[in-house]
Image (cartoon, rainbow, N blue to C red; front, side, top):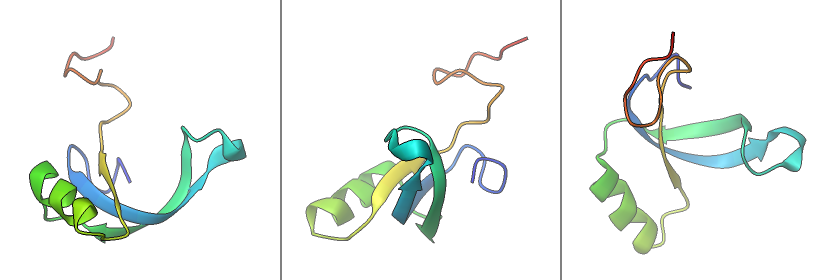
Length: 68
């Protein structure tokens, strides 16, 4: 998902985690690619069956610093 939708808020569901660790996503259905974090959060509060996820490329830290 990070490669197809870099630096994008996604609404995902049907999430399968690697080794049931609850951290690394093995697969998921991408439902929304065109919503902001606020829009996705409101949708969750209204009962939408999605999980908001921000994609960050592997070579960047969460705060935006690049690794070498």
